[in-house]
Image (tube, rainbow, N blue to C red; front, side, top):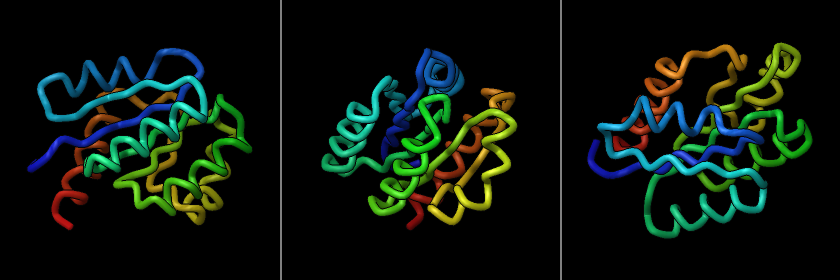
Length: 129
């Protein structure tokens, strides 16, 4: 990987951000946790303004409406990846989420190891383009 990649995580409680920090500890990823939509947008915009490729990770526990809006927003901003995590009901919305621009949709039972590997893959694709 040629340059650092920011992973901006929007979640209501610490789960995915600490897990990704642990899984990606020895890599050039910068994992940033957010609890509000506003801080998520601000951190992602700041990273992109600095020329850093970004992956947005949204836990749909923040609310489906906010999640859908953010998926479309990330797609418009050209995020390197948009990862959605939700309960089993939310995962049934995968076709709609992908149509809006989500690159991955997972049940909240996904392992941190698998999630970290997926982020690595998105970063490689981003750095190759």
